Length: 108
Image 1 (cartoon, rainbow, N blue to C red):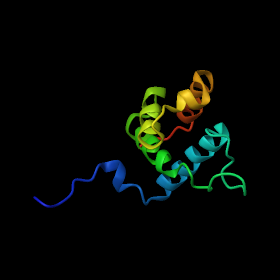
Image 2: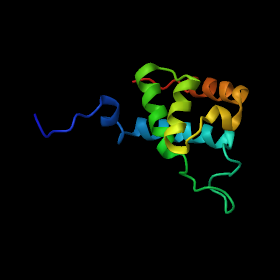
Image 3: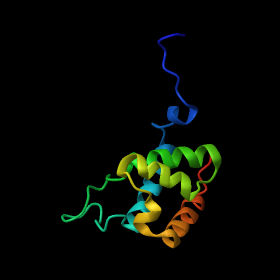
Image 4: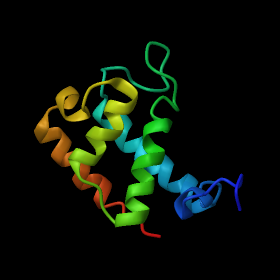
């Protein structure tokens, strides 16, 4: 099997309807917190899919663990924006955001 890339089971589901619906749900929650004050999908804002690269790993965690913690979301955010999301939106909003993520009831 050398030369064959290993694919995480969650990644194999990335093309499914369930995956797409989960990413859409996570994107909607990300849009609700307006991390940088730019309303995605508006003329003055960010593109509608601005946070899709961050939503995918969040969905992966929800599928794998059934929930996500703020430190996990912060780690994802640091990868793309070099700062934790909790510093951008504040710890109280981050706590509410993670609560809403976990209430999506996304499971493998």
